[in-house]
Image (cartoon, rainbow, N blue to C red):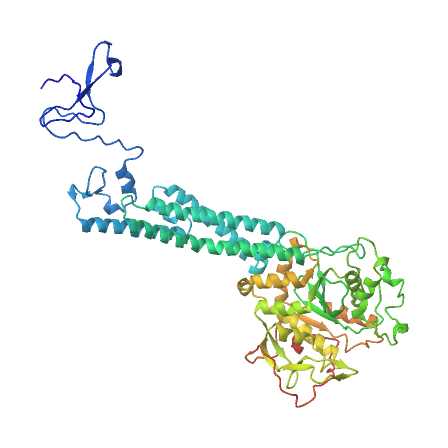
Length: 605
């Protein structure tokens, strides 16, 4: 048949058996090398292969693959032993060494590919970028793995170089919390990106739908393993920032000057030989200014040895002196005494100083936000003869929440059976019947928040001195039993309880130095100044109190003395989650045992 093109009489040309491929006319300028415009070149129809000799049906031409050949991408996701398997697009069945694989062999090859993808994705979950080292993105895997290693080494050095508590406190500053938040967020995103990229690079191109969904499900699980702790860490940082915004308050420095704060360098306390902190237990919320101080204690710390001197101030101490630069000195030049109000100083006791100053707030500077707190601090400084550097106010009801959040506290409950009363109300020197709701049994045991609170504040069956001794023992126990690893598990509860019930005028950026100081306190001696046994509360000898304090803080460090938190009991502890309600067989002693002016705290704990 002639090779000259002809027109079909119908819209679609129907090729008869043995007939040549239909041709069409095109201008010469469309053909490379065409010179004569009148020349007509005959070319096959687009997309059809022209076979003039045989009667075979024309086959459509396959488009040329773009980018890397398909078989190259497939082979990069294979293990080395499987790379001799052919995966060419034009092959209906994969081949190996020129031989077509059976269905069983194909399934086996793809199963090995899936196992490899799961293994590498899991490795990228264990450590960022490790799984990418066996893919074409190996250099990215090297960068991620080395970056994670350097970050971990730096964080480990910061955290453990000066102790866990001091290291953690470095991230508790304002800048540290923001840096930690950014580090956790970016680190989690990079880690998760490495997991997703590993899964993408190791997935097969000819996998079945079940294999693809298996890898997707596994990858999702691996992402959650990284994402959930990261979200929890971000939550911890957010809760901490919120609590610290409430806890840390500004200190009024209009009278008495600033606190002797730590410096910089390897030893921040090098130029500060001693730090004095006042602990106030309030019987009202920390956001209420008109309150009575239920307990008052000065903690004087030797920054070199960690030796701690505890000085409890009796709540019923009378005629306490106001500093001359305090506006209250003009009202009470001879001390806080007011017999005209009811005789015998019925209202003018140490625990009423806060309210007295608040009632005369107009006599204080306008920029002084809390004259009651400031005056209480200054009066106690006059009593003990020490400059009070920092003050912590703790709501006593919040103390219960704090101990519960810490998981309880181990302590030795003193006294004969039935123990320390819970509740109780005294009227005219007698206990109101039915007001005692239970007892804390004697012995070494673990107290929950409620029992720890009544251990520290109950005074129904004893004296104020007995009560103050127990408070010193409680402070001693809490300091010694601070475990950073246990606190992490109860971190949120501790922070929320602290934010609601504690106010502290320590600058937040000084927390790392104070954490280091707490570590030193654990290895130091703990001494107690027994004020109540040495002076009369209605006519106290303040010069004698100052002399006792001076003797205590000048006592040399004794490496053989019991450390902070040591107790006289060696028996195994019992748990005290509920009080004993048995009736007492004997009346608890109301007299305090005579003790020396300065003793080791552990002797009474």
